[in-house]
Image (cartoon, rainbow, N blue to C red; front, side, top):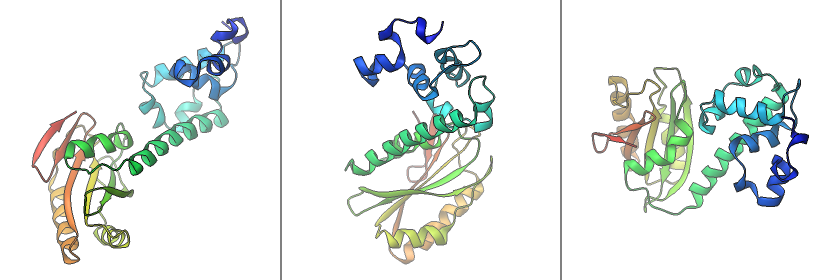
Length: 228
């Protein structure tokens, strides 16, 4: 069915204008980004196909490579870039909210919930650092390195320099395991100990190292595996 054949108040743009963004489905919102259909297919058809290809999850759509987005009929390079940019803006908005939400980070569960949107469904490892003040409030976070399916370097010297610049009292190291198991390997344990010793020289404490594997996590500070 073409967009013009829908009732006016069921067309994505009109629906959003009349009812607000929350009344729209994910496919409706994607349809607005896409703008129009192609080859006899409505923009809603194209949007629904995209959601199906991502298993109905925006988190998977957000990490879908541009070449895979472009492979869908009706999604050229410009539209693929628009979708990727919109989902990245959503992630950044969430990050900003976290930084202004003045809650002390007091458990690995909180770290897991905070970082899962950024690290879930990746096909490579990333290493992130959370910088905390004396009250355990988050004062900054950043990705330190991006690696392969099985490893990513932990740059102790860079982390130390950044922690000093931000006047952090504590830091929390976070990285993901695309393999699905959060249990640390020998390299993880070794690099964690190296970083802990480096930070202790300037009296900054490594509060925890949390390894995230989608539906579970491992906390070095508590030496246990947790579930979502």
